[in-house]
Length: 226
Image (spheres, rainbow, N blue to C red):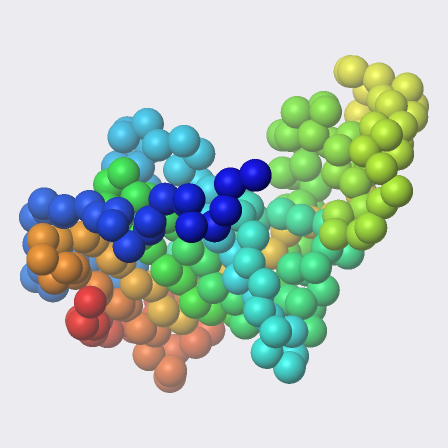
């Protein structure tokens, strides 16, 4: 058995960035427009699942947790993902709606960090999305009591097979009552872009506090030291 001392040394791992600077003068007035540009770049760059994002939540007493989920919709209102409402992230969001999203687009030497408040979306919106999911994924949403302790993988497969027999391919699967979406309404959106000598660009949009619920909020941009 290899010892810890035989492991690769992470301190010796380095990437030397070469990039065009990210300048304030080139930014749009609101962050979603820049998000769209970067998201298109990530998709065009053939990144694996460019809509994958790390969602971080915390309990009311500050115990954090993170996991990777898939972004399924975004617009001027915010960023939407779906989950079981009994999952750890859902329980934490219902008790403490503060959340952070991280899009780690390493091959492009870019990342986006969103902070804001999450709330459940309407059942009609959830149902409309659920109908677009592959049949197997619909059954999986029923079969998995997400974040709960289960006896074995065999138990999970048995639940799935029972559902597959009840709702065969081509038959409509009902929308689970304990499954649905959350929308994270951004309060800050930080765009990070790598640059040589560790002089990375970090430009953060901050929603002005007097326009939290406005359809067209006012944003200011601030530069952060890397």
